[in-house]
Every structure is written in structure tokens, then in C-alpha cells.
Amino acid sequence: MQDGGARMKILIADDDTMSLRMLRRTLEREQYEVETATDGGQALALLQEPDGPRLVLLDWMMPVMDGPEVCREVRRRRVGQHVHILMLTSKSSKQDIVDGLNAGADDYLTKPFDPAELKARLRTGLRILELEDRLVEAREEMRFKATHDPLTGLFNRGAILEHMKRELARTEREGGTTTVLLGDVDHFKRINDTYGHPAGDDVLREMATILTRACRSYDYVGRYGGEEFLVVLSNCDVAVAQARAEAIRSQVEAARIQTSGGELRATISLGVFTTTQSPGLDADEALREVDLALYRAKGDGRNCIRMAESVFTEIAEDELVLMPVGA
Amino acid sequence: MAEHVESPSETLDFRDLLKRLDSDLDFLDEVVGMFQTEYPTLLANLDKGIAVDDFVLAERAAHTLKGMLGNLSMAEARATASRIEMAARAKSKAETVEAVPPLRGQVAKALELLDECRTAARV
Image 1 (cartoon, one colour):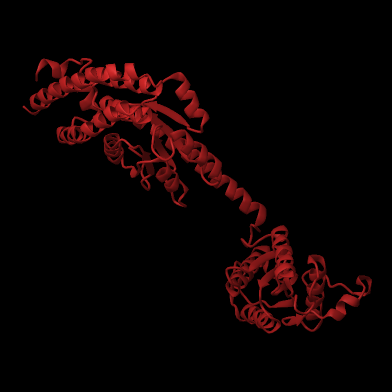
Image 2 (cartoon, chains in turn cyan, orange):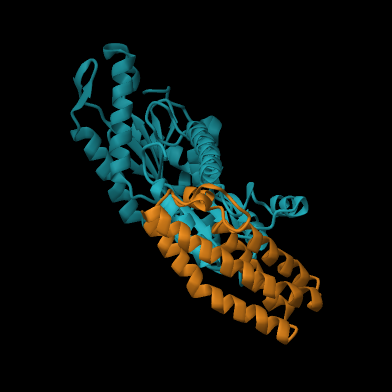
């Protein structure tokens, strides 16, 4: 019997209806969710379904495609989760076993089946699938950690820059617009110094929540560094981009942020860049534009948004007076 | 229970068969019914394959029979079906033809024994 949880789907592929019936009954009593196929083509189609079975009892001789052909196709086509294939056949010579395993079967059992042995071998298959699930889970966790900021759960600097580059390249290639917002929490250093770093962290988490809520599922929000956030929006014209930035600013201003240092208020300054204003810029150039716009917002008193202006591209970097972090 | 129910034989290992079916006699009736439905068709395919030298058809029919007879724990008949399958694969008409009558006889004998066992098991 399977251990708790959802019932495991299993496919029985066999053109012998009696064998199919006996196997079905044995496995249903073991709480498997049984699907059946009476030829290799049907079996392959079921295995290609997005939520298809990952455990298979496969007969060798079947119409349309035989068992080894199905094995080879499954191994060739399947790029997602592993399918554990147990070949169950009355072909029992050493060479048959070698051929079956070489075709991609994970295990091999000869007919007539012994129920206890069949159940034990399927439990082995389940253990292998569970191990694979744990490995995939660990890999996904590592992938998430490598691309996300642990404090806010947003994309980290590397990931958000990658998304921005890709969106700008897509816009250049296919048309449309990409908007980049760069936001910086005003006087953040003062928040940290006055209320402590845990309170500052609470503020950053609240910013992440506001930014995420303000964006659509296909937009990208990332922590660019420190108290800076980068947002990449697809297909917003200048007016919409401006409205979106203003909405973020006003939501931040209105928020009563619960922190370990008590309830706090904060504001944010934002620079806004859209490709309609300056088409054809690469990621570094777009970042420079939006950074200059943010710089202007800070210079104009903070808690405001400023659109990028191409005139700033004409200013040499050494002519700028850079503001300190957290200003 | 009759002696042949307890003692496995090459004709029929009833204990092994019951073990495979979790001793469910109703399910045994269902399985035997399935065999009795399909057996004539498989034999007809075997005969037809031999008659028209369609060895693929004959091999497939023998292979399916072999599987069914194995599931029914009829080792002797299963071995004969296996011999026919191999002979058909080798396109050996004489050997294929020669093994069919024994197969019919062994299956008939095994079914007769199976009936007795089923009746005894119900008592």
C-alpha cells in the first residue's frame, strides 16, 4: 500500500485484456490510480500528457508500437519529470531483459506476475520517483535563492537586470514599449539609524509588497540594491508608465508600515524611463537614463517621480554631483 | 478440498492462481470467463495464420495465449504456446502445425481441472 498522500497514477499498457484486468485489480487494491492502454501509441499519448502517469507497467508485444519503442520515445521526448518504466512481459530470455533495459526500461518483470514481487518492485519505483521529486525541489529552491532577494522575496539585482535586458531586447526586436522604474526609499539611512535595522528591513518588505501589488503578473519587480527597487513594465505608454509610478509613490506615502520599531511612514522617489522616449537604448544606457531621472526626483525634494529626459544623456558623468546612498 | 487443489501440477497450479487473485473466487470466475470468451478467437487466429502462412498473426496469437495461460497458472499449455510462438517467429510451419493439437488438449484438460478446483474451493 502506498504511504498516505495523493494516489499515484500508474499506466498499464497491455493488449491482453485478461492481464490488464488482473493487473488493474491488483493495483487498485494497492490504492493506485490506474490508467490503461491497449496499444503502444495510446500508452505514449497518455505519458505525454502534462499530468500523465509517472509509473508504467509496459508490455513488450503490443499493436502500433511495441514496449521498447515506447520506452525509447518516452526517453527521447520527455524533458520533465522522470517516468519509471517497469517492463512486464512474457519474454524472459537474458537477451530480452538486456534489450528491454537498453531501450530505456528501469526494471523488468516476467509474466505471469507474482503479486508480492510486483508490488515490491513498484514500491521501489515509487521510492525512486520520490527521490527525484526531492532533488527537483532542492534544485528549485537553489534556483530561487540564486535569483531572489532573501529579505523581500523579489528578484535580486542580477535577475532583475537580466529580465530588463531581455525585455529591452524583445522591444527592440518586436516593437512595443518597455518601461523601467527605479525607486529609492527616501531618508532610509535615517530610518535605520533611528529605529534600527530590523525596522528598516520591515520597511523594505512593505515596499516590496506595495510594488508587487502595483504590478501585473507579467511585470518584473526586483531589489536593485540597498533601498533601491527596479521595476520593468511591458507595453505601457508614457502616460500609463507615469500613472503607474505615481500610484506607487502615493501608495507608499499612504502606507502605515508596521515595524519592530513601531508604526512608520516612508516615502519613495522614482525615476521613469520608457523606450518610446529614447528608443534603441541598451540596458546600461536605459539604467543610466532612469538613474538620472531618479537623481532629479531626489534633487526636486524627494517623494516625487521624474521622467527620464534625453537631455541627461548629454551630461557627462563627471559633471554630476552624485547623492549619497539613502539620501 | 480436492487433492489437485492442494497439489500444484504442470497442468494447473490452482494455489498459485488463487494467490495471484488474492483468493477471490468471484474474480476467478470473471477471469476464467474472459479466457473462455477470447480463447476461440485466438485459436482461430492461430489456425488462420498457419493456413495462409501469416506467421506474424500466428506468433501474435500464440504470444497472447501464452500470457493468458501463464496468468491462469497452466504451465504445460503455456509452454506449448511458447513453443508455437517461437516456431512461428522462425517461420517453421511444420513445427507450428504440430504443436497446435497438443495445445488444444492441454488447455481442455486444464480447464476441466480448473472447473473441479473452482467447485471444490466453493464448498
